[in-house]
Image (cartoon, rainbow over the protein chains, first blue to last red):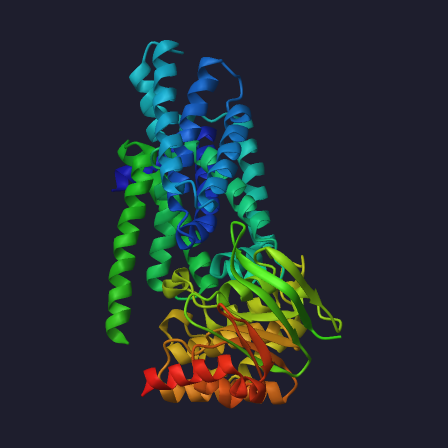
Length: 283
Length: 236
């Protein structure tokens, strides 16, 4: 235990570790904020589908040897988010089938590209990194960190500014429409935010585990609190704590970063389920 | 000029009319009930009046200074709301969303309006409670309070007493009647023809034949007599 603590203190002296912690906390904060809406609106599967799209785009970017991969991955993911939301609203096209189609297609396409034009000799290592995050968060450049900080501030700012609107369209779309709220515009906004978060979170936990980062804190908070504001705040707090704990544990125990954070998220969820039960019994 | 004037309106989905030939007017202070068989297009008509879907033919004219954003709507509950973590206060306040415009937070005036409306609906004590944990009658009062935050003029309600027990139903009807006496215009879809005849002053019957007129005219009309007799037969 003391050994692990000393190890953490030693690592904290390195800038790349501090970067990783800043980025990790910001990403956890952003993803938990929008997670509440995503879960309540039954949009969780869109997040999952989009993360696969981001994986495909990442593969294309690495094959094309684009210097800053985010500049390609972000627009592609935003575009797909908008398209998926459109088909989801049109009842004639089965929304869930469309999402499955796009996400699995992107996954296969990405893996194919990575195999046909390998960017390094270790293909399975590259794929594993993109899917599960592994060590990539510890190799962030200063530029990546700034990119992440700016995007996070944008996401958090947008969320705070439109907090009540997001509640309005999440709780009752029909009523919101009837009093003249431009519901489609806010759905579009939510889709763009999801896309940005997914691209950010790919660095932290990899594309397969992103949904966990978005969904678990929201579900945990909903076990304890029964109003929207408290759920949002609690979800943000839980998410930041889990990410921080996950990062530190992974440094001390040399475990994969993404998987460790998600494991902490799962543990927190189980604790919250227990607390919820106790409260339910007390009432 | 009436609040709402419908001229030869046809409403439905994908270009196919569910109900057509609808002509009626809603004057300030009216209490209008929309009645008809199940599936006759009552909800579709109401959605069209709210501009939630485009009319297939005909016109809906708003008058007397009524804006579309000033109509308070009490929709039927959606499945999302069944386990939604939202407090009563958060929901009632969201009735002020069109007043608020692009301002990020509610101002003192809007919060005061939400408080007063909750007081009036007798739900002040519930303001911190979670909506999904309330009884059906309490939930309808919350949604009514939200609609009242959106309007001081006209309320549109889609079967507000669906699923409520008789005592709570009567209480809700009395509450709505009081609002009408205070000058709020009521337009309600009702499957409860007896209550419609007791409280409403105008009836719009839709189905294969459309009727619009005062309650007394409806009672004497052929279509009204057939429908009222049919309902009595099923009730008895």
